[in-house]
Amino acid sequence: MQVFETERLALSLLEPGDAEFILELVNDSAWLRYIGDRGVHNLDDACGYIRIGPADMQARLGYSLYKVALKSDGKSIGICGLLKRDSLPDADIGFAFLERYRGQGYAREAASATLAYARSILGLKRILAITSPDNMSSIRLLEKLGFEYQETVQMPGPSRDTKVFALQTP
Image (cartoon, rainbow, N blue to C red):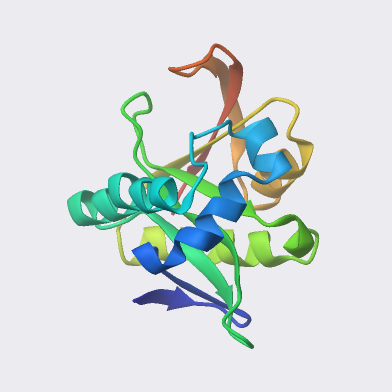
């Protein structure tokens, strides 16, 4: 089910039929480097990831990570949306794209639309973002979107520094 769209992209709820795409995305080298291994190594794992992650969050909170697809041909190219982590006080934006679709403005387009949705439809006043300190492309995108660096924290799980950014919405 489509949630919103941009000029080039359609953002929709992740469903079990997206398992093959999710399997590819979460095993992408950049995902593994900057986000980490989520233990998704086959289609059943991918279905479980969708069910206990985005689908559950959408049912509970009314937002989640969404599949990003090209409007021109329906090809799934990444995910973008909002998450609510127990370790953070506010929802945070997340995004990841398959390597062959990076550097073409899709992440900025999807993230800008997600922020507009968060403000106008969800009424969120403050949105966070987290990233690895060495993920310079994500940091640059967050800064272009208006996020400001807040602090570096240790997130739950395998110990590693995480940069926290914040965006106050008007």
